[in-house]
Length: 259
Image (cartoon, rainbow, N blue to C red):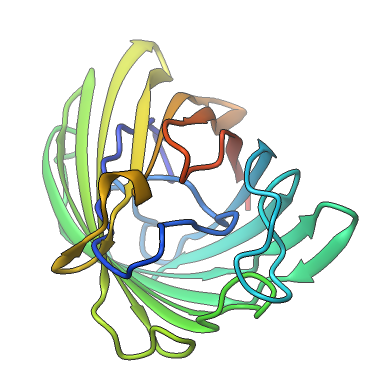
């Protein structure tokens, strides 16, 4: 996200489990691109999203369902080297009826050995690794890791990024099971100086090697606007669930805060 924040077209695949793919209200909705803090540079982003229309019943005892909920997540980052960035998420959740929770911290490290040139053109490649301690009111797996490869290409007008994500549960009923697989694709088009617009497409299909039936797969399509014109740097998107396994409407925003 840092620097030019660009919208995404994200296609994901989670392959497994006999149950339908139904995620809790996420603390971040984005596809990672080549953005990375410079060495010694601190960054702060605020992720805010809500589901005005979606699942209102709990999938397991004590869960806060996403419908009418809000999630507010400060994300702190620091450029360790030219190719390595460290980060910390501190997500907070307000569920329907005023159920408030600190969702649990999440540590991450982003490594980007291949980056576009100084004009922001060319290929990029890297990986982001996150480890999360999650509240039991949000997930049955209270300890989890995400491995997110980052691949893509960009120039002055277009951006394409792919994040084939692997998710691992270290607790809960799926502890030690096959990882989930969530590839996502981002396509963005600049429409004016510092402004980009484009769709974001997300799906959840199950565990690796075990595709869910199509009716149990989750798909959502967002229309997003991204602005990088001082003093404003933000992303805003409205998403529509495309099937019964997905929340019907979700609104998200990511603001970059001067640090």
